Amino acid sequence: MMNQCFYRTRPGVLTLMLSSIVSVVILAAVGGCGSSRIPTSIGMYGDSPPSDAIHSRVFEATFDEAFEASSEAVVHIGMFVESTEEDKGKITGNGRYQMMCGGGPCLMTATFAIYINEVSDKPETRITFVATRHGFTGIGGGTREMSIKFMIQVQKVLLTYQ
Image 1 (tube, rainbow, N blue to C red):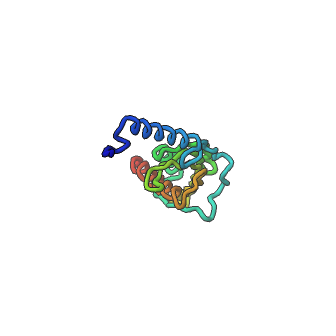
Image 2: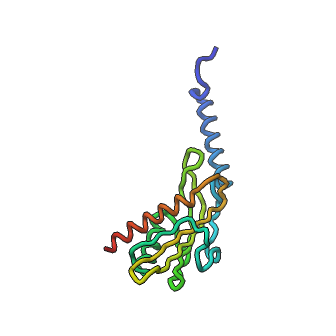
Image 3: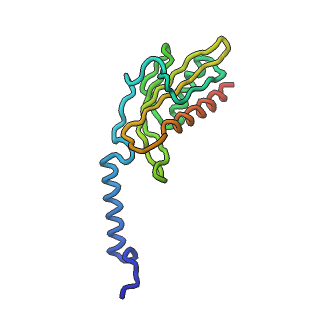
């Protein structure tokens, strides 16, 4: 009769360690929750936001302030700027964004576009954030959560300008 748990023995611990290592290698090979390559955002988005854009907000800021704050906010959420077109009021980029999936953290590979345009003669500027996730098969958001965190970071950056 054996009263010991298998994982408390030396072969059991080695088996557990080996299975963990193999699992990590397999997840890394297939890209885990997201794609192993990050696609480019260049050429993916048009010159104006789509009509179904999920997150848009008007800030009390000039166009130049909103454009600069948006560029800084991208870095604050851990993403990368690929192109800036200030004359069109557009910033595009990509990266991996950490979100919760299946009860634990998961990296979502995403591309995004930020559209900035003045809405009145007062210093009011609309910022629209559009994100597309890639290689992620889960149900639900991620892009909405990312856009909300982006807008919060824009607000924080704009507050430093006052």
